[in-house]
Structure formats: structure tokens, C-alpha cells
Amino acid sequence: MNFKPFFLLLILAISSFPASLAAPVPDAMSNAAKPMLNPITRVPKQTVPPIQTAATYTAGDNINIAEYFVSEKLDGVRARWTGVQLVTRNGNKIYAPTWFTDNWPDVALDGELWTQRSSFESIASIVLSHTPDERWRAVKMMVFDMPVSDVPFASRLSTMESLVRGADSSSLAMVPQFTLSSQRLLEAKIDEVTAKGGEGLMLHHKAAFYQSGRSNQLLKAKRYSDAEAQVIGYVKGKGKFAGMMGSLIVETPEGIQFKIGTGFSIKQRQYPPPLNSWITFKYFGLTKKGIPRFASFRHIRPAKDLPNL
Image 1 (tube, rainbow, N blue to C red):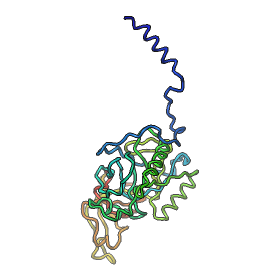
Image 2 (image 1 turned 45 degrees about the vertical axis):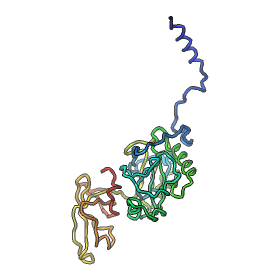
Image 3 (image 1 turned 60 degrees about the vertical axis):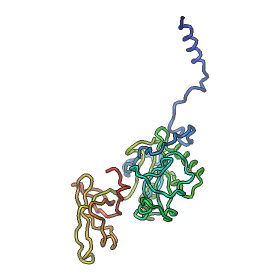
Image 4 (image 1 turned 90 degrees about the vertical axis):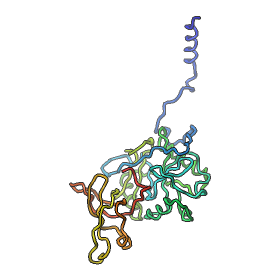
């Protein structure tokens, strides 16, 4: 059998398809404000999608602020709704009450389990317990992203808003996103949020795709830096702190050892973080030897909520 005429006919038929049937080349910016039209891939049980983390914004970055969505950085417990259950950033199960996730969408969502500003330890004690109680009534899952790698953030945002509205759940909400037109307004907003007890702001490029690990198109903008360190010793208190802990001796994952003597309540000095536990501290830059400047205690970091150090 001669196949040549058959293939010629096939080629002519394909070439005569209308242009409207050709697959368009995606344009991240032109599609940025549109919701996702394709069905979202459902996430199987026990699957933990990759976690995206933020780089640090500095005023010298000279970025176009108008290209970013801006939101407050919430100091809660980072969580992932897999579509069937809540897990921590490291994939550990979060024992939320059954009613808490009723009617949530069966797709993966990134968020922060949160109650109010400056309440990390209280939030952690609620959501990381294996025995959920009525304190969960004060908690909300504040959604800020969904791990879909081939869709720009602005489109993901539109889809998330639709999903959260559709769930009609008192425990599921969106982190408010807004835009600013200049770096001057951004700096003023950082100061405003910090003065009210907030951590700072998050900047997410409208055309950014979700990626595993640190993204330069997702930025955290704060007046200070924070990090984790392990407690390796204590310094006894003097004067008004006699009989209590005066300072913690800590070590960073990089092996840098230093003391932290501020940021503690009297109760925390009487009952300091245990040896080998991890804490979060804030600081303002590094010395030439790599030691954090003006380090101050923030809170104990539960093992379940530790980032990958």
C-alpha cells in the first residue's frame, strides 16, 4: 500500500485548521488578572506540595512596587491545606477539629493559622496540640497562595478568592492583598504596620510563578531580621534579675554562638526555654564576625514548626 498520498492529505488537513483552534502562547502579564480556567489538579491524600519561601526586600533593590501585590506578614503558624488535611510546613499533621475544615475546597492552599498580632506562642499552643479544643474557635486559616507552578500569582489570587468565597467557612479567609504606587508609600506602610505590632509586609510579583524554595519574586519587608537558634546554655541574672536567667547562650545552624539578654518577660526569665530547644530572635544586621546585632528574644519555636534549618 502506498502511504504517501495519505500523509499528504493529513498534512493539508492539519494546515487548514482555523487559527482560532491553535494553542495560544501564555502571556503572564496579560493573563495576570484572570482566574484559572483549567480544572485545578486535586491533591491526593498525604501529598505535601513544595513550599515556597520569601527573599528579603531592601530599599536599595529599586523594584517597581506597582508590579507587586502587598499584604501584611502574619506571625502565625505556616500551614498547608492539602485538599484533605492540614499539615505544617514540614508535612506534620495538624490536629484541627473536624468542623474547622468543613466545606473547604479539595485543592492545595498555603496559609497562616492566625488569631491576632504578637500572639505566636498562643497560636502555636492551640494548633500544634494533638488534642484540639474550643480555643480553635479564635483561629482562622489566612490563605495567601496556592502551589500551582504554571499560573501567575495574580491569576492564582483571583482563583483563591473564588474558592474561599465558595467555601463560605468562618474559619477560612484571605490575607488582604493591595497595591502601592511608590517606594515611599511602601516604606510608610511598613512603619504603620510595625507601629501597630505587626511584623511587616509581603510583596508578591503579580506575574510570579510558584516555585519550591526561596523565590526572588516573593519578598518580606521588615524593619528587622529574624532567625532561629538553639539554646545551649544560660547566664545567671544579676541585680533585679538575681535568681533568674539573665541571658541565653545560643547557637545558630551555622555554628555562630552568642548571648541573648533582652526580650524576655519576668516569667520567661524564671522559666527559660529548655536546653536544646529552638527559639526565634530578631536582630538588626550582623557584625564583621557574623554575630547578630542587638539580638532580642521573640518566642520559643516548637519543633513541629521549625523551618528547614
